[in-house]
Image (cartoon, rainbow, N blue to C red; front, top):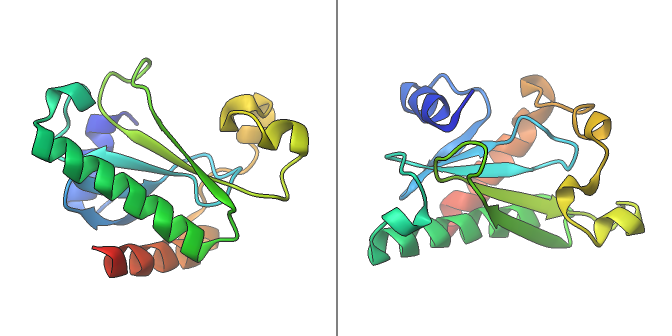
Length: 146
C-alpha cells in the first residue's frame, strides 16, 4: 500500500496499524516490525516532500515526528530513536521513526536500521493481535504530548 492509500485508509478508520491522528497527519505502525514499534508519520494532506510545506506546516510535522519518538521511548525499552525522511521509492512525504534497542547485535545497532538482512526485516510483520497493546500504549503516550 502506498502513502496515499494509507492516508485514505486512516481517514476511513480502516487502517489496522493506525496509532492515532496527529495535528499534521497520522501515526501508523510500519508493516515491518523487526524493531518493535517501528512507525511512520504520514502527512494529511499528502504532499510530495517536506520542502513543499510552509514553515508552520514543517514545524508541526517535525514536532509530531519527535512526539512519536518521545512516545516510543516511553512505551518501549528503546534507548534511542532514529528518524528518516527519504521519499525516493514512494515520492510522498513520510517519516520513518525507528526505535533502537540495546538488545540488537552491536554490529547492526551502530548502523542504519535497514542494515539487517532483508529476510530478517520481513520475518516479523505487523500483526494486529500481537501489536494492539503497543498501539494503545503509543496512542496514550502521544496524546499526553499533544
